[in-house]
Length: 138
Image (cartoon, rainbow, N blue to C red; front, side):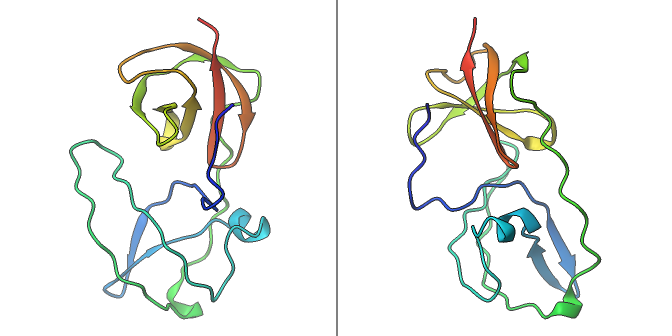
């Protein structure tokens, strides 16, 4: 199975939103509920572009007030289910050497032993809100 470093507290997909000339990334409620993040705390984040030809732009820390936020939307369900078998395209390799595929809405599927450019058929073994882990079946 995939090794996740102890220092990684959270992994999710979000959209950068603009409110009054400031930019925000909304943290899903589930990240607070699972104690991956806490209001008022400071965290180091990484912003990864969705497309390979996009460039990452440095961001500065902002302390928003409660009235800076629009009404919260509920986090969508993961687009995969445990036990599901599907073909994915491996886009890159993670720090631990595992293949990384993205499916609907940029949802990440981690596939040990897969290489970029491969299109393996995998079985989804574990599903989390923001990432799934799968094994190659053929």
